[in-house]
Length: 220
Image 1 (cartoon, rainbow, N blue to C red):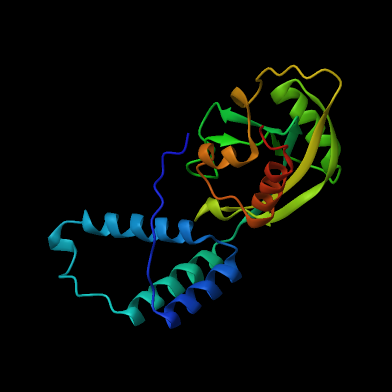
Image 2 (spheres, rainbow, N blue to C red):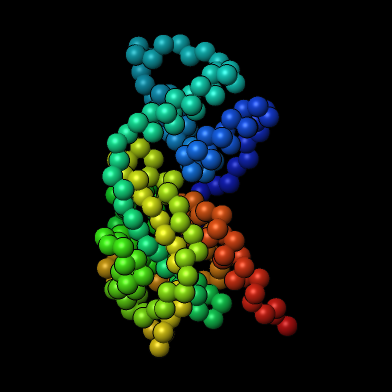
């Protein structure tokens, strides 16, 4: 279940525009960069006074420069690219998600996920089907690509993760059993996915899940 808290942040128009430009350039969410800034602040706060000069109040200009320097530094890190394919498996108006067995080496805070994993060839659909069988026991039909993005949650890790999200539907009997990297599997309503995921979900995936939710027949 979601363990994070939702907060609101008020920014002057000029700073807000600069922030949006940075996020658009780096494909980051507001949550991710705010989290990184807070972590950096807490680390600085824990530094002994002898090695940490007296702090002055940070102005809006300073904050903008901090953000700029942060993303500039991040952009200079040499990274290898990993491609992962994930299946949004839809059955009777519900979506299948799984709980990871171990901490992900590249994405912090990753807990519940869509089934799938790293692919090593251009046969994305075939590799995804194999991974879904291994992780869930399901044979699936890959319907279409829902979204592709550079995953924003890997922070300063030395990798760039390209995530491909595919709409999938089960074929044959629907009997699930967790395997490989997943310890639990759960069918949930599409909108309930956000209660489990602890990392960001991009707009296309969000719209796709909500469209499934809206298409469900209304309860009498």
